[in-house]
Image (spheres, rainbow, N blue to C red):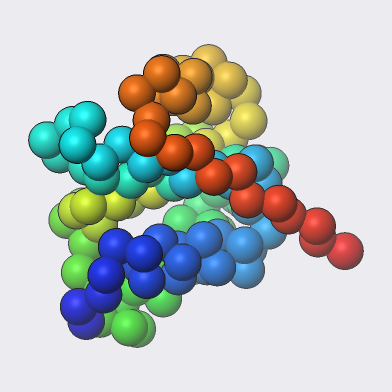
Length: 121
């Protein structure tokens, strides 16, 4: 399925919210790198939660015939990366996210950062 970057990103955010991902950030780095335009970063509370978020995203992408370039990290589920080409989704355990601090690394280059509010009841 051919989607615009905005349409894809909206679906990715919805899918990770379906599984109650936390601390969701969309970071626009278009024109700053040659390999990606947007990063979506989120946190899961445990390795099982990270894996559940990732597996849900992969299942929804397959169901909707959305092509992905690759995925890494499902085995250990401390940090799962799913590459959709123009957008890369990073799903972290909290301590792994703090350790690598991708948010801080990219903030200096970002065109725009969108922090998604989550209010799960």
